[in-house]
Image 1 (cartoon, rainbow, N blue to C red):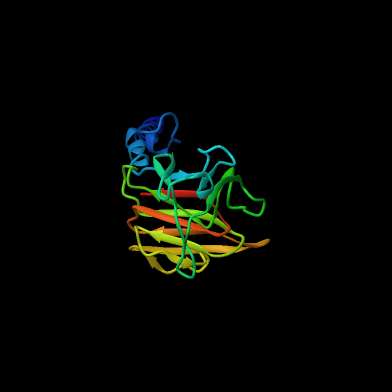
Image 2 (tube, one colour):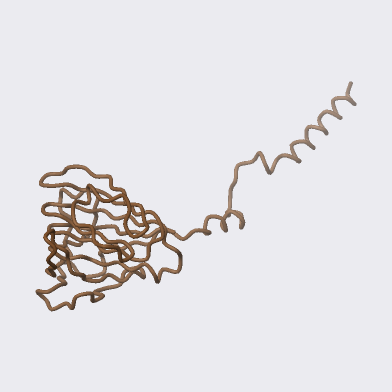
Length: 210
């Protein structure tokens, strides 16, 4: 009887020793293989409009040349571009770095207020193929422009965009706020550059994903 008990105890100990590493909680440093998997895909790279000082203005009133790169944030050059009006005329007014309007719950910190001007974003220098771009917007009047990969410019409401532009899918989730609308537009597909702006439009969190 004692021999059987001893044999059972030895067998149980051997079983615990065999399965212990699997059954125990993971503690300490993350295994190298897991770290490699976590770092395999680059994180999204974003323009948060935090590089220019607050209240900086770009555009015709301060002599910014059309198409000029006005700052670079996280490897993404941002340029000032002309705006296409509904009737086909072009304008080049101003964009200004401002605090987030109180009604813009999708924004944070500083935002880019565009007034009859477009902001251009170039993703070609990021070091990875961009397959998705998202941006948050607030519209408190007028209409907007959107172009992807040099496509013809869409003129209308970002709340009702075309399904495709420049080889990328376009989708917007939006809702009403006091005085207008706010939303998030998602572009899906190979994307090199975009331009977007409006007549009374605020932009924030322009993010590029692999």
